[in-house]
Image (tube, rainbow, N blue to C red):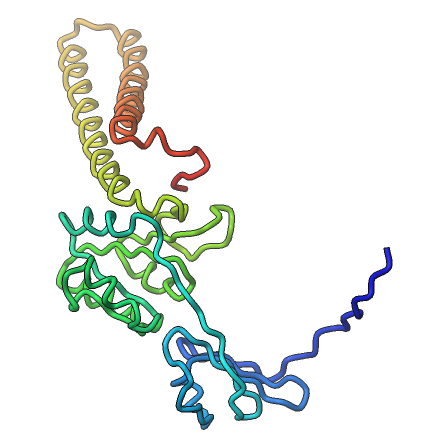
Length: 266
């Protein structure tokens, strides 16, 4: 069917493109120089900003060193985050690293109870260095992030948890990929992880006892080599069945069995 929309030609070529991490991007399109990024970064490029230009949660645009405007970015907190933070703070030290401005400081202060745990205007390098310094005294650090600017901190942490809206979409390199719908279940998943470690330890103990008893009987000469050869794979199957059954029982006890099948850890 014919349309009245004008045909779009090929996109113009971008030349001299470069990116400043945590600052912005710039390049030449035709005879014009475009720069888009933070207010502070545009200031370093000699672009004067209006006095009423917003500085928090805004991305600014300049063409040929002339300020043209900005994109205002708004953010919302995921449901049940306050309950999740309350549960995590009972057993762990929780810190917020955010690249946004401080307009939400009062909201988070009510949840974190201390300004020392709130860090705003953090660049990807700031987040990486914070995690690195936190690990130096021997602390075990888990980093939870939902963007590429968290990739360095996710890799530096002991456990990196990448939060994604779509499990099949690209995500930063991490130890765990968590569906965004399950973020509020993070304390529950941590309890399940600790319980799973106890299942692994119990499986090792069971396997060791099985082998000690089996070797003692075999060494006494009361079992033939054929019977020992049959009992050996049975012991392996027994340990595997114990581990699988115990893990499934723990998941159901903690309520993980009620979560949607598509919303799972990968």
